[in-house]
Image (tube, rainbow, N blue to C red; front, side):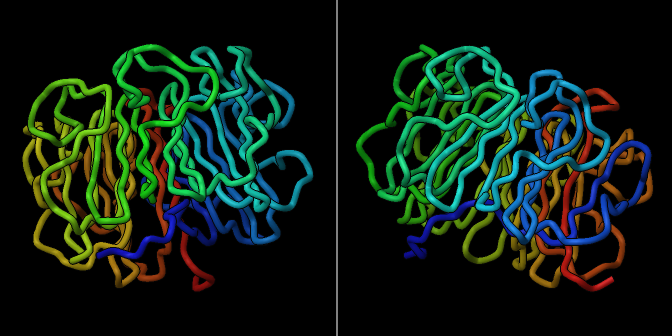
Length: 359
């Protein structure tokens, strides 16, 4: 039986940004370290140790939350609050939880993904309802998922592939409870698919399955949660554009879905509708899935990447695609990683990772 505690955002230290101007990791900003980071379609969010929230990148939909729609090439503070706890970045919208358990959203809202009952874009954080027991949140292309302290799962936004999990294909502009289960502990949102873990170690998926990204072997969209296999030792999960990846309690890494660029990491470019093990290592600690590339950390603090690499987004110093994990540099102090899920534009690639105070 796995630990039943909630699994929110991974902790990151000294956030760095990888983009097409750099084939290896480059420090975003010196000074007070970022503790948490999230990568969206073309924007990044980060929380500092003092609880302040910062953002940078594209901002045409207001996704940076600074009250404007002007792009920002360097971090800018989002408001003045100092109690931000956890956040998630979708394609062009952002969501975050404060230490008081309130949920806030801003940016693109065409499908109601901000959860405020409208389809109006917001350029600054707006509270989602009045509840104060939110514990974990995830953002996809046009939908949002969140878990409350009582273990209930909620979803809102775009739903044309069933990605909300409510058994319909109808969008929702306010949070809707998904099912009656009360043991959800972690959730991940891809472009059009959703995945979540229960406290019993089972993994569930729903939404788009055009490339096998649900992992149930069916190649068929699902509008309600379906269990992925029979394993009861899943530890964490991440969702990319059309691929998904997860770690088991034994430290093994598994992936499935779209694989034209090797983002599954099994040494092939064959898409697969069921989980396949990535290599033979048993010390994987955390993982992030992007549009067409994947990054992960091992327990020894090393950082690994694979998949599409035309603009050097893997960070291995080359621009060659990789169908198996390759080490990124020689550092052993990496603490967390996040990858954007936009796919085919030079401006859409970035990877956020972090390391502790060691240089």
